[in-house]
Length: 153
Image (cartoon, rainbow, N blue to C red; front, side, top):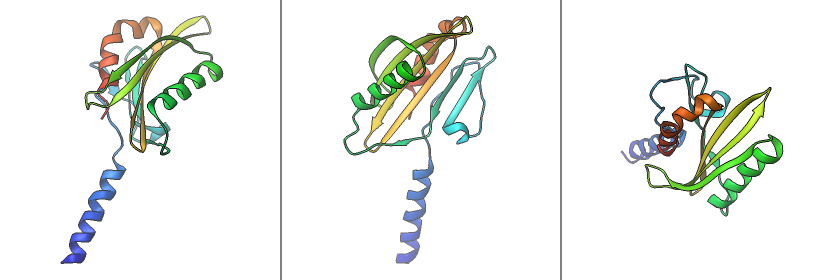
C-alpha cells in the first residue's frame, strides 16, 4: 500500500513538472505548432501573420530576479537583434505574478515590426510570453495581445 501511494505521488509530481506554461490566445488566433516545437509551450497565429505564444519554462538560478531577466532580454533584443525599445511597464499576470511587459520596434526590408514580450519569474522558473508581427497588424490588436500576455499561467 505504501509503495502504491509513493508511486502515485511521484507520478503526479512528474506529470505536474511536465506541464508547460500556457496563456489565452486572442480571438482570431489559431494554434500554430504542437507544444514543444521551437521551444514553445503554446504558439498561435492570426490570419494576417501576427504571432503570440509562451515559451517552455526556463530554469532560474537561485538569485535570478525579475530585474535580471528583464534586463537580459532587453539587452539581447537591442544589442543582438537590432530592436529599439518603445515601452516598458511593470505588470501583474492574471495569476498574480509580477512581471515586466516590454515593447520593441524594428524595421526589416522597409517594413515596420512590433515585438511585445512579457517576462515572469516564479521561484526557479522563468516564463516568457511574446507577440509580434508587422506593426500595422499588431497595432489594432495591442489591447488583446496585452491581455493574452497577462494571462500566462
